[in-house]
Image 1 (cartoon, rainbow, N blue to C red):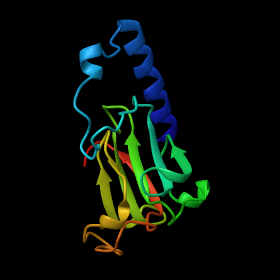
Image 2: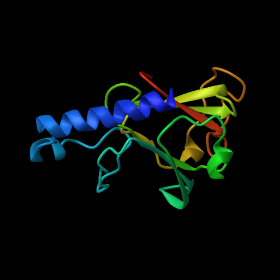
Image 3: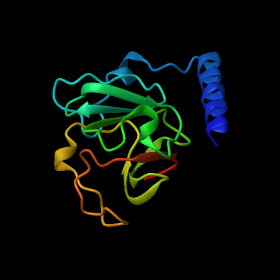
Length: 148
């Protein structure tokens, strides 16, 4: 799946470039996504999930283009306090964050363009082991998907 996602993203970028579908100034000035704070700048989509060690995008940063079954691959397992889904709109645009490694346990779907700036105030839904627990320092894996 990761290979297919990479090929899809490259093909989509080529089509956008060939057709001249880059965002116009009016589109670039569109309202900020859900979770955006006043005065915050919106980063252009780059197809990545970002995680930071501290709230408000502070401290060490890790990024992924593909799904990860264990955030230890970026030394971020159970250490993230802020996340941002900066994926491309379309197929595989949303990210499901999991309490456990291997995409197990409770999960939270982070929609395309959205972020959680201070996960001390966010909890996993009651949909598996770890449900109801604070998300801060409790995300262990993630998977890209088509919808929340």
